[in-house]
Image 1 (cartoon, rainbow, N blue to C red):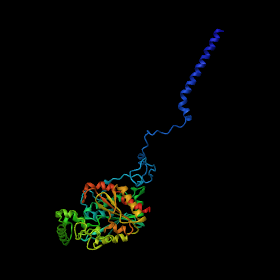
Image 2 (cartoon, rainbow, N blue to C red):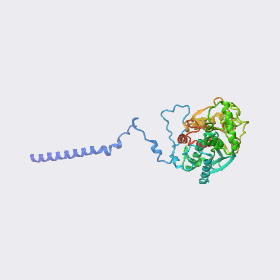
Image 3 (cartoon, rainbow, N blue to C red):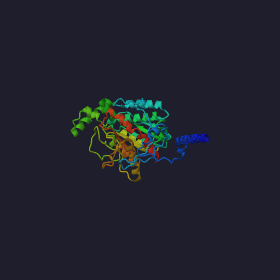
Image 4 (tube, helix red, strand yellow):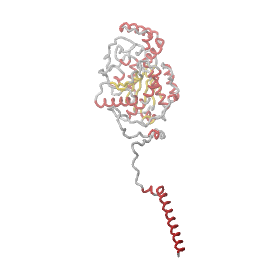
Length: 414
């Protein structure tokens, strides 16, 4: 009896031990495999948790199809004008552009002409070159069309209306090469350059005042005509006598803004002619000319403006000050259109917007086109006095790289 009871007790204890082991194993295994399906959803990540890097996401996606983030920033920038929403930028290499040289401060008319021919030979399906006039000293005035001849809209870009601002010729030529090189792979605001320029043709006048640029770069040797050389000598003698200017002859020529006749082409247009008439004789700057539109370069650009199909807007490259001019007494909805245009250029370049300073018209190219219902933004490049040093170029290129494409997209959306 006693022995049987002992055996029963031993068996019972073993059974209890086995059950305990099973329960322990179940408890240990349960949280890892079963219990997680029944736990309430975790709370949101705390504010201290670092955010996902959105930039890393955009770099693995095609830049053409990537959509800009719609998230509202925590704080708005200190401006009354909302920032422009842009698609992610794309990588580009300035060193990949091998045609237009940017290693010399004096980018000449002859170099520009050779580069235009090279670009047209390399990209015959994207470019068309034409001559729209002749300068006082017999140089041909070139206009190049970027994009489709069948485009219903167009934008006109002109630079170096002032001789000593000739770095803008290098700039517009490099911008032209840039758009050609990245024609199929580059984009602005999510739209391929190819699509932009097939829809809106870009007409570029890289050097409107080739005689003035040649004088600023090479002095009297920059003129082909001996009669014009003699005329420039006389202009210097008269101008320095009137203004009692002690500037040396070589420095006077280096600072030359006018054309070969001593006329400031950006004072020679009819709208506002003579408003700023404190310079009453030919000189290296600011003389408006004997009468409105007296100069062949002025007449030629006026004719070009009238001939362009569907001209929506213009860009004028000047130097210096990193400033934007846009105002010429516009009113109503037209003023709004022009103001939004200059705000776009400000957002792209970071340059500050200036008004008309109480002088709505002064005989400039901008006055001419704006008074005819064609918006213009004048972009003043560079932070030091002209002629600009080469050290300014790369920064200016980066600041203005998207301006032409942006202008085309802006007016196409109107």
